[in-house]
Image (tube, rainbow, N blue to C red; front, top):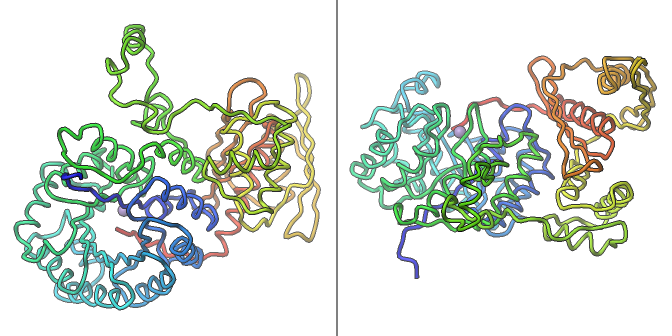
Length: 514
Ligand code: MN
């Protein structure tokens, strides 16, 4: 029996992080991540903002029904149409929660154009309405860290009275400092008469690099739910990083005397999946999940670690799921072996997708003999993008070399109807290919970022390309993997164009949320 208090982990990767430009996910990708968050054993998944788009609605609906374990939460402004839409999305969910919010700082009240009393009334009405759909309601006074104290206490008390069982204190703009924010949580505990009927939650942003320490200080002062994201992704500088909060509480259990329910061995697999699908690489020096987080380079340190890990290592890499790949598949591995390995990696494919993945796998295995887990992940994630393909690459040919002008010819199908063939020359084969694709698709986008990395080791490794494009302020990310890096580059570019085409058809509220 564990006498220590539990800190609930509320993951908002699929809502706060997904709102960042270029990180848009398809419904299918959101479900993949949600399944992995279930394996990680987060307590709550904030799956989306149902009123914001039909896709968000569908993602919340399906995750609520299909992902076992965590509570599944939908976000709603404190207005009836938002709450009704969230309630509708969660109507078939096993463990539903509605999270409703309204700005309570002088800045935000002025922005809404209401009086403080009217805002308090809207909060109460929103919570009551949400309770008509679900028993589990969370309320956030947005920009709480800049809200006048007596008014904040009154709003929190009224929201609990109306039926909120979690009260979240967001530092929406990343303005808080640890001692002050911790003091705010303590003040709320001391001054809100009915506070023991609700869990206090915190939601911190990293604008000053203090999201994690603000969250931990709040927890020391009585908060028992932390809202966070995988890899610390999120609006602007991001949210508090899930892996850092969890591993701080675990590694320094002697100090915090708390625990979470997280299965830490799933941390690195989750980090990799989110990074891949959102197209946002993890910095090598990122705590816990960066490529160098456990690399010891100085001679003294290496020697020390070999004698005893604890000399220079506070976390065993195995505890966060960093283990050398032990199983390698080859062209002789059958469909069954592939399915088995993919299931161990967390992918559950239906027969159709498995067949597609198997064909890709055989082509890769043919070229590079040994196929590692990372290769498999690249193959599968390539196959499960699952967005409507306005443009499809049918054929490509490039030439380059010393003394030749790099050129490319592509044939592209548009809307599955017409086929268009174009050629172009450029500074190099990728540039030529991109120009040919731009002509064939009649698109005019700017390439903002281009990353290529090898998925595994050696000269035969698969290359994975991530490309970010933008057009009139609207951005999208595309990804492609292949043993041929020019082909991977072409796939990534077309994937980005398909995402942009998809976004053009989706009306999305750009409301700054919580
Ligand atoms: Mn936020």
